[in-house]
Amino acid sequence: MLVAAAVCPCPPLLVPGVAAGAAPELDAARTACSDALAVLAASRPDRLVVVGPAAGEGLERYPAGTAGGFRGFGVPLDVTLGEGPGGDRPLPAPLAVGAWLLARAGWAAAPVEGLAVGEGLPAGACAAAGRETAAGDGRLALLVLGDGSACRSLKAPGYFDERAAAFDERAARALGAADPDALMALDEGLARELKAAGRAPWQVLAGAADGAGLAGRLLYEDAPYGVGYAVAAWS
Image (cartoon, rainbow, N blue to C red; front, side):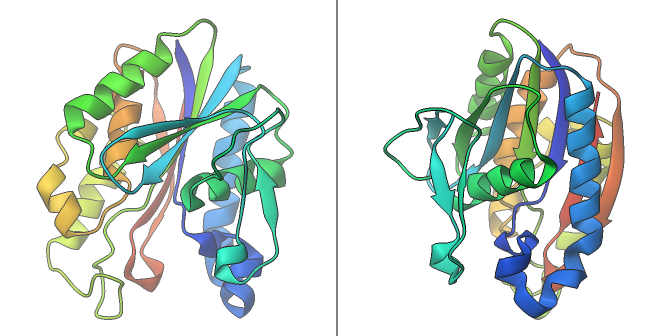
């Protein structure tokens, strides 16, 4: 049963060593992520699943202790997804960001595992994965990682698209209201055109939260670097 969720963006720039001189620009986002993780810890979960985007259309699970890091971004920083024997495959970058957020928060509230969701996975399959994840024994918490559109400015990774702000507003409103139906209504095709990597993880959350009756709070919403970032807490 899902008892709490934290929704955070997942740019490697959240890690100060990666952002270097630009690190202060995301201080507010880091603070909001810490606040959302505190909600997870307060929910007394039996297990935590970190959900984030990945390339492709499939699902990949990562056991506790799986390693990742930021050497591909020129920073000799390694992380692990909680404590455990780990697996053979390294964490995708979004899950590595999640592992860094948990380490920064001193997470010790529950065992951790990871779920990477292909950005092309259809909405129904995302929701089914969420329901399957929530159907396990005990109290489940989710750390859901994903960015909004990457088209909010001329210098954004996807250039400017006039539809991007409205898409991000709908997503942020749904996340702040803990509204699974509104998350499921996000358009897959539009999300793909706007390079919104959070669509699939958010819809996994929607499936997991179906019938859970959680309330939500939007803790942060902005578009630095032309990319939509939102932080929310559900409990």
